[in-house]
Length: 182
Image (cartoon, rainbow, N blue to C red; front, top):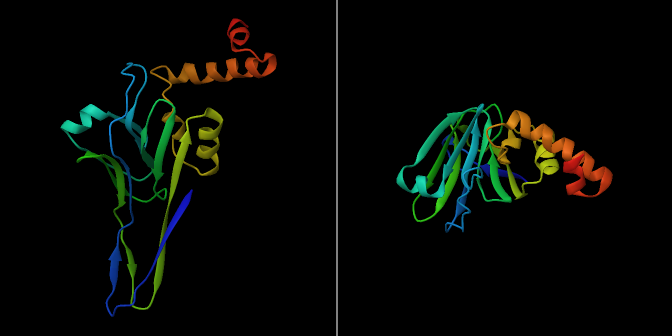
């Protein structure tokens, strides 16, 4: 989704506004606890993947600064992510205060003079972590490293291309077992 906020300044003074977006999860879900699968708060700030588990974020909030990327909350199969306007500096934060939160605020305000209007937008992704879907949004919406929402593990450079090979053979023969053997 693309979400746009608009405002008209009806006052007699200039107003400076900072775009802010947040995702909240009320309760900690059942977590697999499998060391090769990340479940919790996730994001890419500039070129760096940031992952925090539900338990670790209870102990210490995490703050980041960047100019491209996204933040979200992920489970084994699902992701909710917010994406600020790219190439705009922002401060991101993973917090816990009775609920889990991933948020960002743009660091440059939108100044609105009396009688003028302005708008700001962000992108919101809510859905399954399917490779074609995630890669499609990464490309069409130009979301920096959005494919890292899928936990490819430490050997990303190997596992993601291997997935495409197995997927190709699966689509060809219709059976994952046979695709793996091929």
